[in-house]
Image (tube, rainbow, N blue to C red; front, top):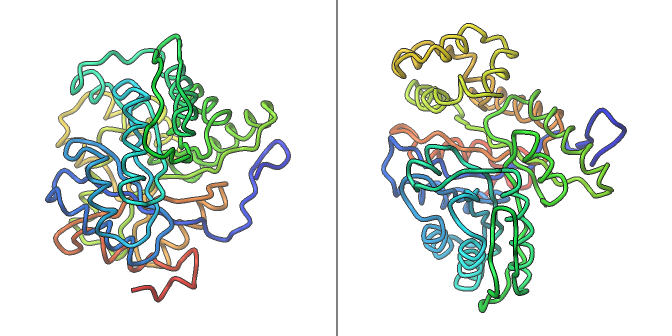
Length: 344
């Protein structure tokens, strides 16, 4: 909830906790099902099913829904330069109707590697594409016919034949344009791999935009990698996941602000990834992760809540000593809702 002009109110000492499949490239592909089963068994609030190099998200979501009891699903974020509104709406409605599960959807811009190199698409006017996709999905997921003549997207005449899922819409945001779209069109905004301090600033910016638009501010979620009682392998897995972010615009400035200017400067010199990986200190990993014993992880969750984050979406490390991140999830279960601490 917004208040004043300087902050957000989060009345809970800890945020709500959801789970995202890790999609770790150094682990067996089907290990994501282990994570999903644990998240369902432990009664987490939400399971995010993304799409990277392995599985089609709609196919994976269908399998997971068949093997779990009740956990709601958030599919995506889907890259708005890769999938069109009809593809996304048809996929979401298919999973919802065929499984009977609550299914929400997330969209974002994704990276040039995914959009341009993998899919051979042109990524242009990302914020406008997010805005047009958001409006189109609102229409389609409500069961209405879409006629869109946008500046980036076009679609005419389609209406869902499956039951409209009326899904909530989440927008992945980092830059100013995406935050403006999230503030005015989303039910929830999600930020990825950011410090609590930056999460708070992004949340406040979004809140101010929503206030100017005379709209209730969307909820704020943060994806955060996590490992409770980490092994050396867990630390290395989370460290590898940071390499591509260190020199990126916005992220580099965030890490510099957190005290890692030398590492960012080195990253922007274009070193071999192996050398950059070796230069990442443990404290940099800790700055954007929930890692350590349970007290340390609880304190990390509290910092995100204090920054104005409503929901932390944990991405559990998955290594040979903790396949699927099950130990991490079992340790986290109940932290934000003590009544769930005994769930098995």
